[in-house]
Image (cartoon, rainbow, N blue to C red; front, side):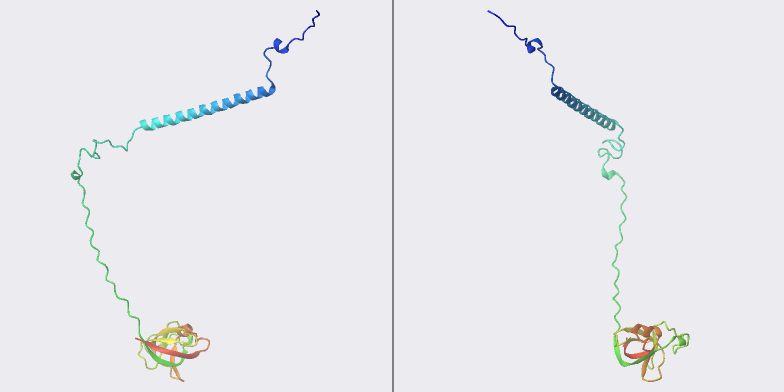
Length: 206
């Protein structure tokens, strides 16, 4: 019987075959991951050791703000509260409520009627008035024939509703049908500067 030569078995001749490239890459990646995990664990351990060392150093240091019981004045066992000299607080004087003064009554007004009003210009500034004072065009003053000197009169312009309170310090006017002469400032307050004169209503303040 004729026999033929058999082909040699590769696996039999080489029982340990080399790993493929993909297997080598996987092994390298696993090794790298293990190294990273090992490094992170080592860093965490070092940080924890540093924290514990700091805590031990702080805890073992001197504590000047702690007073142990039974020592010093702050002890609650050696001294009672009544043994300390606690200065008595001075009594606060009783504050009496301030007496509230009643508000001044609002002045009453008595109507004096209506009439024409004019005003003094700057040309009379400094002249003596019937009251003896110098005329000031910028003061709220006026002249009236019969009202007592020093009287206060509300003068109202009915055309615009503006009013002003003037003090009588002179006599007049003595021409035409005018009932009152105002200072320049008073005439300006009720809008008589442009017209020079106008109809007004008067009320005496008492």
